Amino acid sequence: MTVHYDFRQEQIRIARYRDLEREVTDPLALCLLHMIVEELEADLANARHCTRHERAFGLDHGDDR
Image 1 (tube, one colour):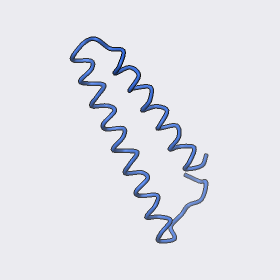
Image 2: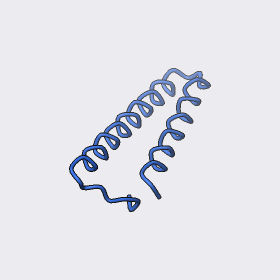
Image 3: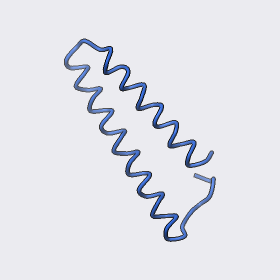
C-alpha cells in the first residue's frame, strides 16, 4: 500500500464519522463522535507532517508503509 492510499483511507474514515455526527440526535453521542473526529484529524495531520519530514531528510521508505 502507498502512503497516499493510507491517507485517503483515513480521510474516508473521517468522513464517515462526520456523517454520523450529522445524523445522531443524542447529545452524548454527538460529543463522543466529535471527539473521535478531532482525534482522527489530528492523527492524520501528524502522519502527514512526519511523512513530509521523512522525505525531506531522505528517510522515505517508499511504498512499504
